[in-house]
Image 1 (cartoon, rainbow, N blue to C red):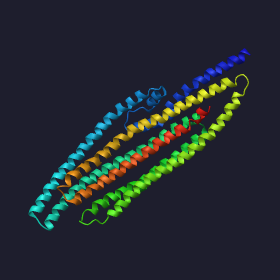
Image 2 (image 1 turned 90 degrees about the vertical axis):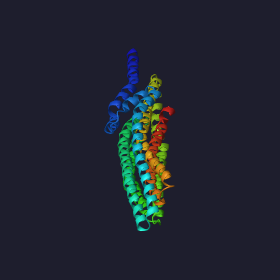
Image 3 (image 1 turned 180 degrees about the vertical axis):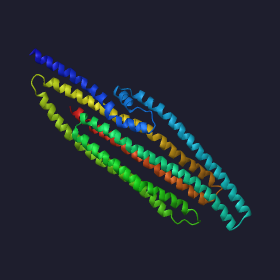
Image 4 (image 1 turned 30 degrees about the horizontal axis):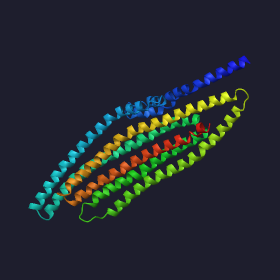
Length: 372
């Protein structure tokens, strides 16, 4: 009897140490994919360190740590926008002088030649800006895909302990499909539509009469609807999965817990140990998800500021140019503004998709702990 009681105490002691061991194992192995993505991006943020801070309850310290890493990126993004604004203001002054001289001293073809020279200068500036926007958005999408791959690997492993293998497998497969969908949607639809719209808007304002305004509006509306539809579809499927799969795993675990608790003598103690293990797994899972969301904010703010800064610079240039320049030039400036807004919408949509999906999974997979 004493020997059996001693074995039971040893079992309970070893079981109580398992959550700590699991956290160390996640830090070194399952979180390595996210760490490698951050290293490739040139970031010195430690995903493992953020998870450890959150597990210990140091939320304020985690946010402060990330803010220190973010402040330098914000400053560098604002410096880039100063250059764009200087270019646009210089071009605005040249355009105003050129137009005034052309209207005062030249007529007919000579005046039109002055407009086309000015328009060519703006085309060069706008093309340079558009390529900057396109490169920034593409780099973000590529980074986001790699980050989601690493993040979902660590998250799925944590879900196995907190909820069950059925939910974990389904979530991992679903996120792989989402990643493929994001790549397909952006590469073959969104980016080509934005490029075509940009070129058509420039061509549309060469002559006095607009010929492609409706086509440009249709492309803009189509790209926006594609992004909204993709977000709604993914979240809808994710919600259905979150309603069914965790409940299936919870039913299996509840049956196991009832069976263990019915063991005479040691059933109550084993059930307590099992509840503690599930609670530790839920804490680790939620901290991994929360760390992924917090770091995502740090990664997404610099490209957002860069693209938004270019858009605001062109909007300011358009405001300054409208009283003194040809309306076709101010109309052509909308090519960069509309393109930048669509890229901002794309980045925000993908970011919101990731955050809402992780939050939905986190809440739904806590059912085992609350049921226990």
